[in-house]
Image 1: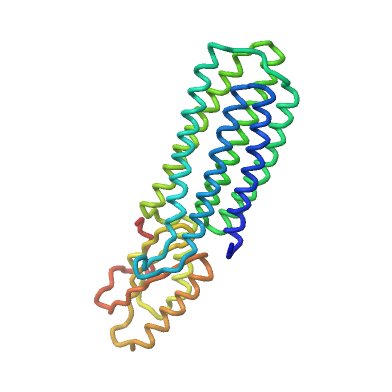
Image 2: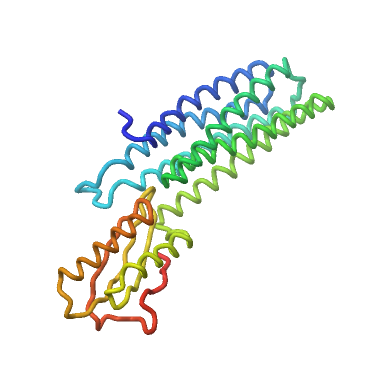
Length: 302
């Protein structure tokens, strides 16, 4: 069973990827174009990537357990790394085909039907890629965001292929077909590297973006007035979760119940301001104070 909208979107990606693969394979079969072959190869990667994304989203939704007390959120980053590796393999296949096709350039068969078919596939990819990017940003899902960005990159390369093939048909320079395939292969390779780099950065516990850090400081300042200060604020992203830690300095004579009440108020306010926030607060007595003249310390990059 698909338990939430993200899982349903990931499943939808599989269906869309299969439809697009069918159209692009048909376009290649109609034309014999190595450039359209490169487009079809990338669509095979899209199908596998969609399957990996669905698996990752389902694993990330699992609650924390004894062996994974912080949850399974990073599964989405791993999926994005796998997708990047698959893209790299596809780029190798495309570049190899382009290399051999340069020496054997030939006119295209049934070019107009092939271009129309490939263009329809690109329109489908563009629409679904936009949906995935929007959902990935809204829900903080690295797997869906990576899948959507990959589809939009695929659209950009497909448009380049279509324009190039039209130029080749108009000028009679059939070698442009192979040259375009090589360009697409290079573009796919760059997209794969970028995806892997971003995902590895997430696995290295990158801090939240500056705008989220600023919002966090504002919330803490607005809801910690009974405390003496807050310092050592640290954050890290893990898929859709944002882990937040900081030290809360209170009067040494304050009761446990009073300090706990401040913590509860802060945790509730932070959860309302930052989606997926998981907050840990370490309460300290007054002699642990670090600041002078400011009640809330700046955001540290951890």
